Image (cartoon, rainbow, N blue to C red; front, side, top):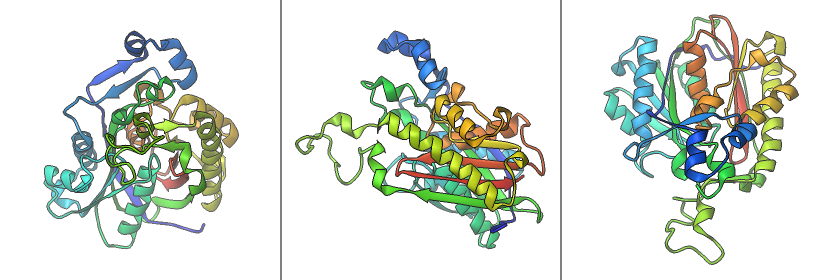
Length: 332
């Protein structure tokens, strides 16, 4: 075993917007076949934020549910990490808005952005802070309003996206529970496979774009085939490598909670991992691809449904724009 952080997750929670949009709704509004959407993605519905809702509006209730699950008050928090690509503003950090809203007066706060891998990274970073005794209680949140970046002229992408938030509270473990191993990689040479170019410093004004760049280029844009091939290989690699680093076999893993991009990717990744389907938690059919929040929501959902028990080995894995991929292995 190369790594052990005696840090456990003592509470989880998630929150999704009230508005549920089904495939049938998209068929009526955009003329995209509901059956086709299910066939290509496995997604049946997704939750979409109301016009007045921003990233923090989803993060705050998820944070409160996680604290309630952990049995702690906001004043007990020492640090809040928000994993997101679309905070309320470019500045200040969204984590600071959450900190103020929930009354976590003793907590530091910052954001982390590694696209859909952000939550897995944020948990790893938070665990290191707790393990090093810098902070005792760390709240890690992932909150995304992915549909704000959707190009509704591109049915290959907008059908995948949903909005939501998930959260977990980290605390020092009992010596047995904790992070057994981690595995993270990136390949920046393939960054163009998945992008959201809006609101960056290269194209800050969509009304004044350089010649050859259209507004459609600023929305979520993805080379589906490249991302599919990358994602299947990357998640299988991450799961196998993190399990190996922990000195375990795949049979020792109780549950794998992957990034819920679409079911076709998950199905192919499961085959490549050579693990049983019942070892993998999937809820993409209900919530769609909520970016960094997929793993956070799935973890809280699995925890709430009693899929995880004390002593279980759980792998959280994901991939994202960058390109980046990775996993952490926990003993619950």
